[in-house]
Image (cartoon, rainbow, N blue to C red):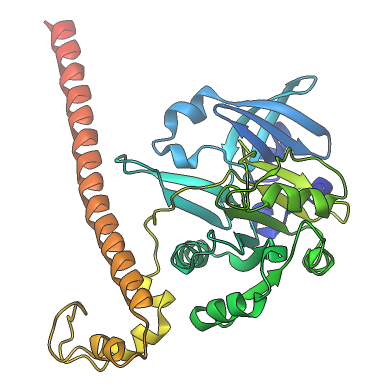
Length: 360
């Protein structure tokens, strides 16, 4: 097995391949760009424009399981620079959200990453409540989060921002940097490990693309000037793309996200709010909702100033969102099961109609 250009290939993916059969027909490659149903994949043989096979398209019930940037896939090369994707390997990590709007489905932002760079700038973009959402979904996806405070040239009180972060997530590694005066860029660059994958997420205008250009050493990502009225850059990234740095670390830039809704996970919101989880044991009732119950230890802590009202309200909001997802997921599962049973029943009825006609 070749080294796949050190694109993050490891035993987790190697163990999913049957060397005696699959490697006779397929070659592993990593998805570096997704553009609707067309992809750009990369392996030791080069880049290939790829489409998914008809079988993969029509046997995949969940669109979130189709190839995404960061995925490892098995391809067949059929022409110069052309390939067909036949299989998506299981993901080691995944960062997802619920799609925007009323539709209830998963949107995979990026997959198979080791670190998630959460970028917020030192202006009105800084938002602890949004940070909590990113941290929760990163933890649920098995990804190590890292905080990046950008545009530090706009403020004099960087420690104030760091202190606010450390209060809710003491162990979170935080980098403070400026794309204008280049402070902090070297420290971040030293953090990048060859063969590891890092994804940048955050709102539009936080300087993600400019930061990637500074890490690469030249202008690969298109950027626009900062708007003077609000100190924000204009949104430029329109697609997810995997980029290889000179030291072979892998960066994935993502378009800015205006909203970020939770998606179903195996973890609980309480895991993100350790101080609330500890106090819950002191509540009078075991099924306490922490809203207006007498004897609620959480409400008492808020009244005493031990837990900020903003943190408490964020907990209730995320908990409500989590419960909605669980309820909605149960209904979706039942509807999907009912639909499958109806289709199966129709197939059986059609079969007997054909056999009855043939035997008559």
